[in-house]
Length: 245
Image (cartoon, rainbow, N blue to C red; front, side, top):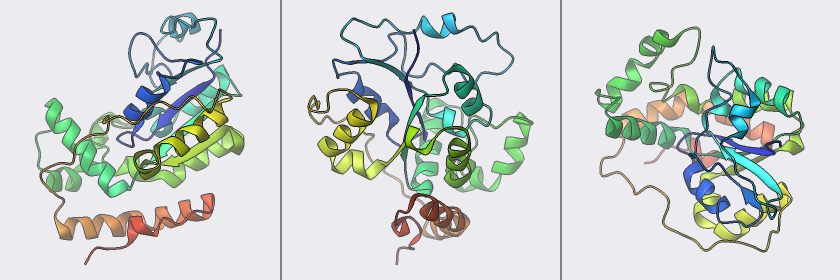
């Protein structure tokens, strides 16, 4: 038994929606225990693969096995561990405007009760608060840090072949459901004609919005990284760093 692919990121980029769609495909086996297995991002644990494999119950009809743990893309040590487990692992990434992603993550942690600060204060104190987790990354307060995608994608390209990494954008999954899923199914090597119907699995929009000045400041923070990602992928991402009037 071997897991063939991971939905490795990014958090709040649409991975839950993608996980729900892939579970409906008759040739794809996803974890029977939970969505996020978190096997490769745990430190100081006995990493027995049989423990990992216990999360899956493949059937004869399944052609590929996969799981969705969005932190794998962000967690520094996870990609190498995954390569050591399966050098031919396929990665599916769904990226989202990093400013919107940060705000969505803050909303999630606030609802969970893990965040008590207002969004501007959480951003202002992020570096200070994240030092609590050193030398590791912080799993909760890394709202801005997780949005620097260029470094994370480059790390994957340095460890895995580029054709083993499928990079999508949140908007594609939302706005072009069938075409995007067919791309994913072709990438995974399963029947691309078996596309589940669209479903309302994306989060609803939040009632509050990011302060205009803070949004503008965050765009300035992310702009160099986004432009680097544009060059790396050959994709126009100017919508992410164009400031709203």
